[in-house]
Image (tube, rainbow, N blue to C red):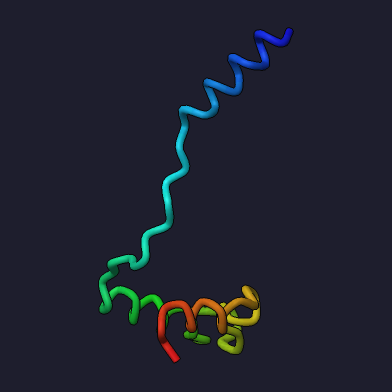
Length: 68
């Protein structure tokens, strides 16, 4: 049993965690399109609601993408 657990530790230790990059490249035009679609109320059934209230994380996302 101990041998099996030791082997499991070795196998899982081989998979390394990839560090998060300091910056991520993105297409600014696509990001702006996504932002406008995300905020577009005309896409809802009654034309009164955008995705913003449904998700609730808009401030965090926009700050991360520098869209303020």
